[in-house]
Image (spheres, rainbow, N blue to C red):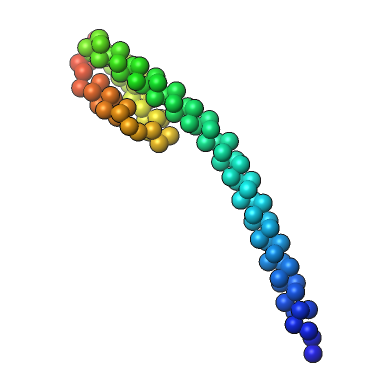
Length: 102
């Protein structure tokens, strides 16, 4: 009769190796996600600043040109794609209600 360890031993070793490899892969993925997240947060912050500044300027001027509005909406779309939210939504909605200058 073959000892049980000879039958299940290779399986146990294979599973342990798989678990170790999965742990190493997970650690690498986490490092990559941190590298990606940092720059995207910086881009989101820069977009928020640009959008906020533009909205305040257009409100002071009492209107917005068609091109300025299109640029603002493009920035806003990218801001939202980066999970941006908050009062920026209200600012953009207020600018959309302003008269469009020629």
